[in-house]
Image 1 (cartoon, helix red, strand yellow):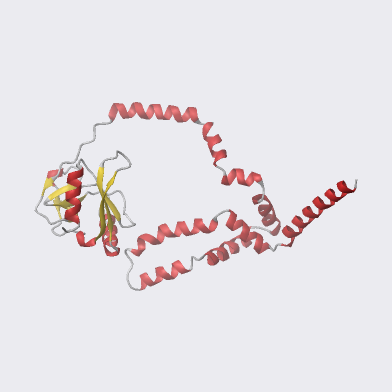
Image 2: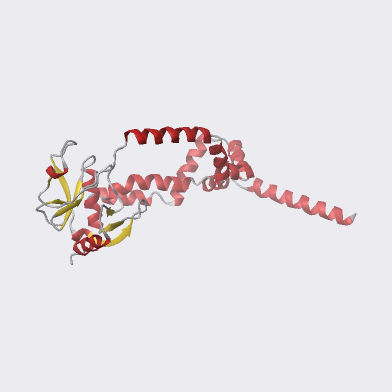
Amino acid sequence: MNLKKTRFLTIGLILISISLVSYGQSRQEKTEAIIIKLKLIENQKTNYKFQLEPLKYQATGNDSIKIIELEKQLSDDEIVKRISSAFNEVFSENEINDIYDFIQTSAFEKFFNSGETYKIIASKFKDIDKEIERITNNFSETVEEPTKKFEPIPVDRENGFYATVDYNYSTADKDIKLEDKPSLTSKDISEVKKAFSSYNDQPEISIVFTKEGAKKFYLLTKENIGKPVAIVIAKQIVSMPTVNSEIIGGKASISGNFTEEEIDKMIEILKGK
């Protein structure tokens, strides 16, 4: 009997201590716990990274300094401070308590942090997904034409990446004109190596640009959206991809109907050897 009383007393004390810990936390402490649990700091950082990163390649002078200042303002503490201020405007203390209590529950973990819920939801739409896939495949078989392989085009230009001149969609590959000077040369490349495409396992050239080269490549792609950019190696246009959007990150790849030997030779040329 005494043992049972001791157990009940122990459990009661544990529950009371948990309640006291929760009760003893300030509104700000609960707010910060909510912010961390909902990963709002990471979300803000990711959001602003996508906005600021391209600007780094364009900004000069005071704007460059301002970007550095803005990045400093996106410290964890500053983000928490600003989100906390927003929470203070939006939520009452009782609502903060409700949210705080909810993030401690297994229901929260299941809904937000477990992929199982979303998998089960997706499984309920499998019939629709299958029909869409079937229709898409039928459409592709009806209208899709074989992809034309790019054939190298002789050109009197030095090695490098070139913008095209007076291009329009009806211009044939062989009639495309290039700028006189390349936007990037081998001097703008910090690393070049052979890689294999994750799409078809074909050999390709992987390029990492220098810091200055990354800026040039960003500007080249930004100014030529919807147009092809020509890559010239050994007096030939070896690749001419169409730019869909500006490219940040300072990386590029050259792919095509190349043998490994051809890839190796082009890499040596790009290395300036």
